[in-house]
Every structure is written in structure tokens, then in C-alpha cells.
View 1 (cartoon, rainbow, N blue to C red):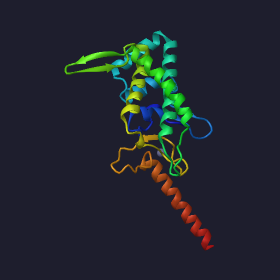
View 2: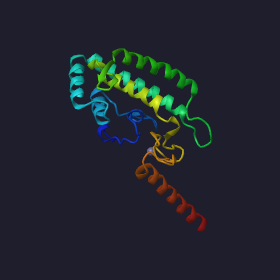
View 3: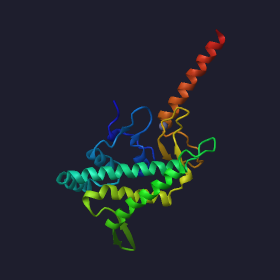
View 4: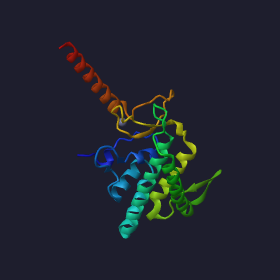
Length: 216
Ligand SMILES: [Zn+2]
């Protein structure tokens, strides 16, 4: 049975990469951890996109307006898909080829810009003693997608995208994306405790089996 969104490991190093990892793309049928608007709310609080108080506000607004809840979830899934395409295009695999499709990434950037423009139109400038902050999410029904659109912009403009990695599928990894924040920049697995060790154990078994076959 797939994990619930509250148990989903957070390995991305940024909420926006964790968002991309809420859709299990491997295998035959993809599994979406953001299965409905309440799963989206729980995930948003867990990764710090929303406070508990804000989640209550959004929950009330979405209960009053179920269509807005659907629209909010659809907007988040749309941002997630766009981010996935853009981030994949920043990854260079071991053989030097890009993991993504630059044309699809370009189209995704247009769509992401539209999402962010809507979020920016609903945002406010807030004076915070010595500086002015851009605060996304003044409309409760759109608070979640607007915050996520703001976070997406933040990662695209300020993160070092040469540090985006994909847990290596070809070598038995899970395909999740993460920002490599290690000093050496040589992190390969999303979680050594899971993917890295599973693959190493499998290789050891294969080597032992090959050795047995060679002996017999
Ligand atoms: Zn992995």
C-alpha cells in the first residue's frame, strides 16, 4: 500500500523539489500523494508552505467553495508538472545528455510565469521594519497555489540549479529530485539509507550470484 502524504520522505532540500516528488512517476501507474485538497493542505503545513492557522483559513474557504478547492489543487498540480519539466532540463546525466526536453521546459516556463503572474497580482507588499516583503496568498482560496508559485520562482531564480540531481533510475534509484547541498556536490542518492543501500545490497547479491555461477 502506498504511503500517506504525511509519511512521504522529504528529501528535496526545498519545498518545491519535495512538491515534484509528490507524484510517483515510475512504474506503470503513477501515484499522486496529493490525492485531494485535504492531502494538499496536510502536505503544505508539513513542508512549511502554510502555518496551522492559515491551513484552517484555507480549509474553511475551500469547504464553503468546493470548486475553489478543486481549482487550487489543479493549479498546484500544474505548477508541479511545469517545475518537473524545467528542473529535468537542468540535469545533465552521466553521459552528458540533458535529462529533460528543452522545448517542453520552455513551454513549462511560459505556464509557470502565468501562474506566478496571477499569484503576484494577488500578493501584497508588506513593510517589515527595515525592509519590504512580497507576501503571497492574500486570497484564502488561492493561498496554497500562490505560495507555491512564489516558492517556485524563488528556487528558479536563487537556487544553484547545477546542484539539482535525480536519484539515478538506471542504477536502481527512485528518480526523485533533490538539491545537492553537500560540500563536495557529489551526492548521488536521494537517501543513502534507502535507495543507495538497497542498490548496493542488490549489487552485492548479483556479484555473489555471478561468482557462484562462475565456480559451478
Ligand atoms: Zn532515491
